[in-house]
Length: 236
Length: 262
Image (tube, rainbow over all chains, first blue to last red; front, side):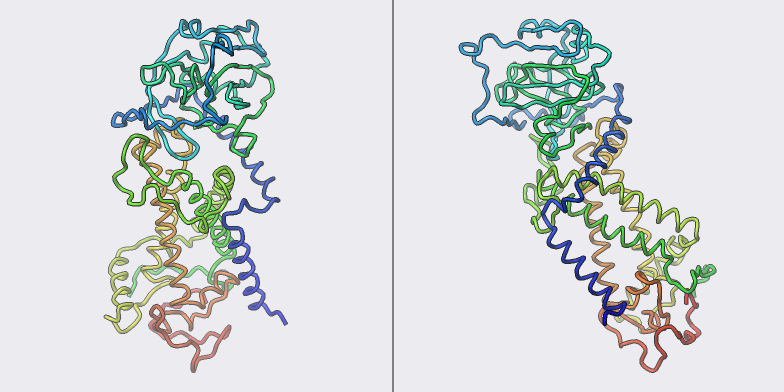
């Protein structure tokens, strides 16, 4: 006979067992729908909160990370643009735009320049302060004139197939830079030379390094980490 | 004697209204998931220092939490759970707080003048420095303190969580907590406080008032088995019901008890 007390004991024990066996696993497969739904809703909240007037400022007491600024890449070896074999590096800006361009580093550096001391927020939980110098993405957009159906922007690299796509609003945030200098020097190879995307309004992994191509799009096309389970929007 | 007793809230003889019981167990699930996924997220960077700096106030910088205490499998998995279950926790808390506000149960939990003295008397009783269990209402003064603190610490956990989720868009909030690094630290400490409150709570349920477990499941509670009646200290009490009628047919409590909630 299973009376009420016994039933509660059994339910309690099996719930506990389920919890224990779930530890450090990824959870039941059926939960995927629930998690995907929550991510969609969270994106709505994040888009609602996004303001072009909300700015990141490194705290006065914060030190520039300098050499302590972590870096990584996904290729087997550190990606380096070799002009001898790859030709001159250029940044291609195309897609849903009226005036696609292909910029050399000199041309990019000749565009309106902007420097900012801001945080870099890594998905892992750390933050690091650096001074970034580059061109505002919004200035670049003014140059190429996105068409009205451009809702997303993809930032692709020459670090294997690494890329991440952004919502237009975050891409045009005034603190979103195509950076070619860090802490007052040309970008180092470990930090994405010759140019990279950097913005405090997105988590680190959205900020494509080793940039070669910016594509305005009407549909989003995911991204390296976004396709591997990390949230696509990843705003701060 | 407590002089500020209000009319007892009764729900058809139940000690806890079904909304309180349901939100309690939803909270158990949500809080467990939030803590376990939070610890997995923490393990991706088990430290607080901004890169290139040192952090003053955490002695275990760089040391991971044992993975058996974590949930989510990897950073992205844990984050997806954390950012989904957070809504479950917040909605559940709103239902609970809204209910106890509208239904009057908050009166059993808000601190009143004399609670500090009563808490001291409870501690004296637990330390065998006092013979008789202090007179109490639905909860003793220490319980009241713990149950009142829980939503407040929970609120701090939610606010610090928002501060590190949106350090740019909600920078006012983040700055209020001393910036991203400190907000993350307060979030961790709030979690720790919730865990400590919970562990003590669960220990006390089994060590002092195991009969109350039923009251949080079916709602039923036998006042004659209350810790006050059994003069129960943690792990130190005689089995209830000896010489008394049991279950359901609760005898009149001794006169010194304000009779509450059947």
